[in-house]
Image 1 (spheres, rainbow, N blue to C red):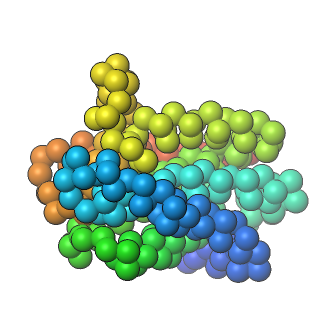
Image 2 (cartoon, rainbow, N blue to C red):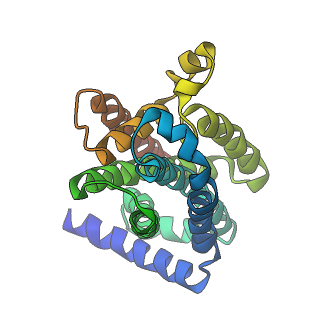
Length: 250
């Protein structure tokens, strides 16, 4: 275990230095939810008034999940560049554990997501969000696990297709229904009945509801669906990523 942690930290250190040299993607990924919060949040006042509660306490959790999903999904693009330059093959000839090659990159993505989530939460508190400290912690932890799942899936898919031309349209195809059916931007209860039923099959919707429940301090049985889906998605994505990195001809 100690050797694995050391190897994954070496990969993480290299990835972090690469990000610090070119922080454009970090800044861009952070600006999108911040702009949504500043420009779209005030428009929610009449909508959230019908539901009751603070509009930013309702909206910030959705932006956290959006940040975790959309930012992490793009993690694979940099991996394709590394594969093309021979970095992945050079790492694979070392005695490092194959899982460390994945987890080192996941540490980078989770650290980036954690910093962005802190900025988003602080901005929400400044704007008037009313949430307990415990609820914020639980919500951020769920967001990090979901972001880790999306990052691991993105890295695995990138190393499978090895082409930005294939990866970009697939990501857009996945993100559109997630954004529209998960209730990130607007309550699904305002949609048609058939749309609400369709959204019930969207796992991210249950994660969004769980993060919102945490922010509102409602730690009840309904949160179990979101927590369960988060753990399941994280486990499946990490397993997939580990298997792809272990392949001899990856």
